[in-house]
Length: 425
Ligand code: CMC
Image (cartoon, rainbow, N blue to C red; front, side, top):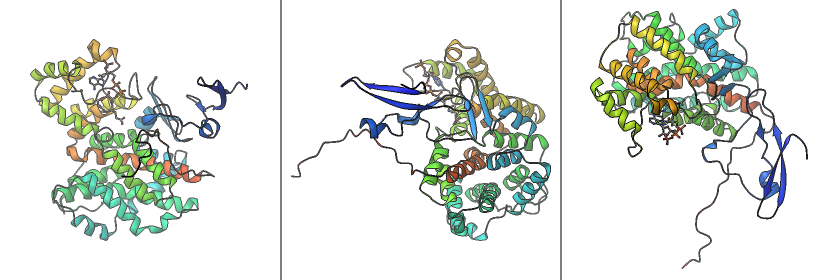
């Protein structure tokens, strides 16, 4: 019996099977069960993949116990505090941080590619008023596959660079368009004199021929939110993107699928739910009542923005955003009932035995919801902001899979619980 194996014994018949252990560069090793069915005649069962590594990856590392998150080996606090979102996007897409010259070229290319084909506007015209911007955005990204069909067949690093830079550059424009169309507001085209993140805020807020100044503190806050959302290893939307990539689908169809997965309130929709809940609670004198409901086992009510499936001690992204929220609130002199309610809930949860003993501290969505609210971003755009941040991560993951020698189509099996064969009547 080799040391680097795991033995599985079937207690029904005493048969034993050996499986190799593969070591990670950092973090948990995995048991290679790719031959499990061939050897044992059984499948493994792991609903929600809580114990399953679905791929090998070099991109993002998370340690949920110690609250560690790294992009390509760089700690998230370094990326958020010392680097910009475009540095982060370049790092995820290319594997290394850019030199100054590379960053200048990347920034310029982002500007040049930020306009979208006018045909996409005709598509947007067809959507009804008040259509959700996530639905519009997903359709808009799918439509790009009709314009750039050649990206279906990518063989060189130059072709990959063109495809990936194109989508990263156009996502903020499509995102802002999806908001303006959903409200019937005039479309604002990108302003080539503004940086990536500033340009998005400008396209959200401006009116034709109006000169608007955006404050550095607002741009920095949004840029950091993009950076913190840029990748999070094999989460639900990234898994959706990889599943499509494994079928050789068009990369923009894969991104569109990622947007669909992200829309759900258990994923990218959580920060919108935080603000809706704070609005529902309404005033500080109601907080105790809702805290009691959150602690009551017979009440399904949960405090939105608290707890995390992977981070069991703290969410490193939340720690960074807490500081940004404090800066932003101070600088923009923001106050009001919502902030008072949020502050009281945060204070209780950080000190109450129920929350402390279960590790239920504020997560990234608690703070990002408040920051986006302070930036006057409408609630229905919160998940769209997440998409802008996550797009480089999705594309990097798509490419990592494409680079593999033998790509296996994602095709899980099942534990069949339906009827056995029935006799037709
Ligand atoms: N409010 C009150 N009690 C809670 C909460 C909450 N938000 N979250 C968990 N609990 C309790 C839960 O009732 C259970 O108690 P007990 O041990 O007495 O039965 C215990 O804490 C563990 O809960 P769990 O459901 O087993 O924990 P989980 O790791 O499966 O769930 C979670 C994680 C994020 C789904 C959950 O904490 C939750 O629903 N939070 C609120 C929604 C939210 O903020 N979601 C955004 C998460 S960050 C998104 C991202 O990174 O993609």
